[in-house]
Image 1 (cartoon, rainbow, N blue to C red):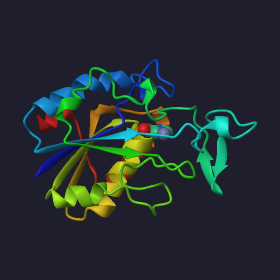
Image 2 (cartoon, protein in one colour):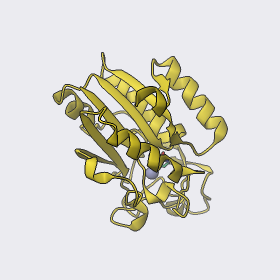
Image 3 (cartoon, rainbow, N blue to C red):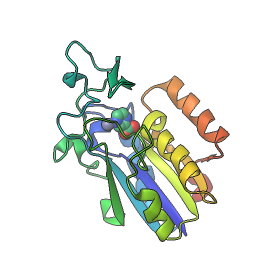
Image 4 (cartoon, helix red, strand yellow):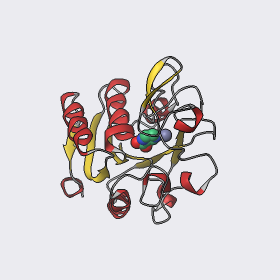
Amino acid sequence: MKALLIIDIQNGFCPGGNLPVPDGDSVVPVANRLMASGRYDLIIASQDWHPRNHGSFASQHPGKQPFEMGELSGKPQMMWPDHCVQDTKDAEFHPDLNTGKFAYVQHKGENPEIDSYSAFRDNDRTASTGLSTYLRSKGVNELDLCGLATDYCVKFSALDAVDLLPGVKVRFIEDASRGIDPAGVEAAIAEMKAAGVEIVTSADLI
Ligand code: VGL
Ligand code: ZN
């Protein structure tokens, strides 16, 4: 059972959004090609889905600016601009993304007290979203990941997939993903590789 997990291809992470990833919208046609290829038995997407008072927002911390480090629930936390607020245009999937292919959409980041980069669980690794149980129940044994942003949500989702889905082959699709910071992307790829994630391009798969 081959599954594709598309991470956070939302307006907020594309040019014009509130937390734009450079060139973020260029992943849309690649993701659409992957979905149309016939390779996948199951296609799932995640959606960053914050309440308007989410504690990862610099706006909730007097004196803090976006992209500074701050604290959330006693732990270091990157201060983000307000982004992907539930039921706003910023949180919607990119309009050109073929969302009709999604069998399931996993929301994340709903608890204002903690951030959730991974589609599988919160950053403190306690609360699970239920995605690993869902994928196991479907008999998934190959999971390809792509989306935004490579150095945050894609990386943490891939590492959690390795951790929570033993025996599942996990791949990161480089050309269907973009990151926030070039050095962060390089480090994220090294980290994923070291954890056993295979680094591929869409041309290797379809
Ligand atoms: C993300 C920062 C904050 C992501 C989400 O989707 O990579 N990054 N929230
Ligand atoms: Zn977020």
